[in-house]
Length: 207
Image 1 (cartoon, rainbow, N blue to C red):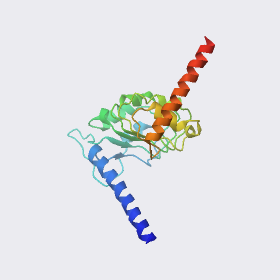
Image 2: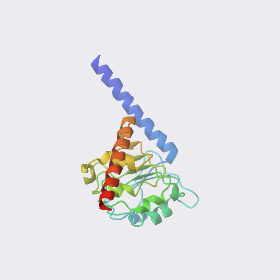
Image 3: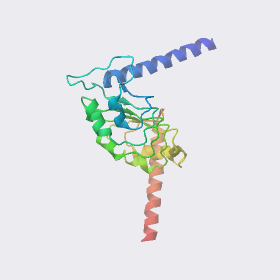
Image 4: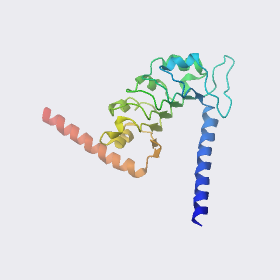
């Protein structure tokens, strides 16, 4: 009985993951995947070919990719230099990039260049070297960002790490592959009011 239940549960989970992948494939097209390429900079992908995927990549008449997903995970990239020019050269609709995966690289700072990607919805930055919560503040202006990963960065040891992300990113629904709950939002609201009060009290004392 127990084994049957576990088997059914695992089957449901696998189906959910597959369904998730299919939904995003349909929405964003097959990912343009340059993971595990030993890249040192983002523009390095212009002289390489993407990894083959489960579905073939589609291109327009100019041979630019009809996709909204770029994977650059497991490389040696340390910054965002050349991102704008690179995606403009590769993608048919560069400003509509929706999913950017830069996990497991050597990034220490979040570049404001990301704020140009107004339709960015998923941003994977786990497994890097980001250490300050203030780095996340740069992403607050992104209107569609609902999923972000930062686990495996020094930043996760900061006090109130998760509360800060929820307060800073108004549309976030998923942090480090864990859904943001209604209770978390309520507690974050209380935390934020307390933080603002402490700031205003401290400012009054200075004045």
